Amino acid sequence: MINSYEYNKPLCSLHTMHFPVKADYYIQIKDKKELIEHLSEISEFEKIYYLGEGSNTIFLKDFSGLVVHLKTKGIQLISENKKEVKVEVEAGENWHDFVKTCIQNQWFGLENLTLIPGSVGAAPVQNIGAYGVEVKDFIELVQCIDINTGKLIELTNEECLFRYRNSIFKQQENKHLIITSVIFRLNKQFIPNLSYQELANFIQDDENITSITAELVSDCVRQLRQKKLPDPKVLGNSGSFFHNPILNQNDWQILKNRFKDIPSYKLEDYHYKVAAGWMIDQLGLKGFRVGDMGVHDWQALVLVNHGKGMPNELLKLIAIIKDAVCNQFNIALTVEPNLV
Ligand code: EPU
Image (cartoon, rainbow, N blue to C red):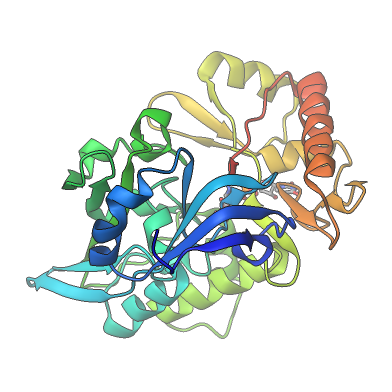
């Protein structure tokens, strides 16, 4: 075994829920070549977890295996035509820094995804989305290493089977695919996406706004997020904790008849996405706590660690919320971040 491994590595600062747990083994990987070189050694570990910035991973207990921390960097323009650019981005790049780079270079499309915590390599896994945009709409290819064979493979957008907060990378049988870089197709012309009502209203209500630029949209999204989403550096959290449930037309109609105000969004195939945060809020659970774990005061879909929160408190909190939502709305909420 080579000396770059660390033992009993504290994971507290490596995942944004900040539970004080450890990994038996830990290694940082700074470029793709290094990963390929280490692959046969890495695959000898029975349990391996590939970690980005830890904003969608919650370590509930000590990890009895190897954590591989992907910190590969690089943003490269690989081609362009009159309308579009193709940009290759290494998995370890910070998502928000990449969005800022895009805006600076006038590569448009990702403005609405400003300030989402996490790494570029994690973005396709759960098909990150916010304010009316999903990352899938700008992904051309995802490059991976198959850790079973050591082969580099490329998956097209279609092959990734992107759906709402989902892709093939979330499925257990594809855990041998490690994302190393993502190729984005971005626009040279800026066309604002104001399909999310809250964002459109925010811009419309500001009389000082005379023209809508990508910088402006990005800044408005930043303000909206900062108004209700806690900064994980200040208050431990993993973003939205539950998926917004997707219902068929019949189930949605039954729910809507009972709860006329429930916010919902019509999807393409006669399904409806309903706001889980609204349901939790309606139950009066904003600010509710189990020990040092709680429902955020401003956004009920976010669970936070007030400082000394422990995994058992989180599990109890999840159970209470799921039970309450099920009893009142007859809906089974599902947890969004990976619980490890
Ligand atoms: N709502 C409440 N009370 C709450 C929370 C929400 O009444 O405590 C209502 C809101 O007023 C709104 C509706 O529920 O009418 C939806 O709320 P919001 O716009 O805050 O969005 P969300 O559905 O709770 C989703 C994403 C967020 C993303 C926002 C904005 C998921 C699981 N979450 O949240 O993504 O930032 O939309 O686009 O889809 C994340 O995934 O980590 C994340 C933060």
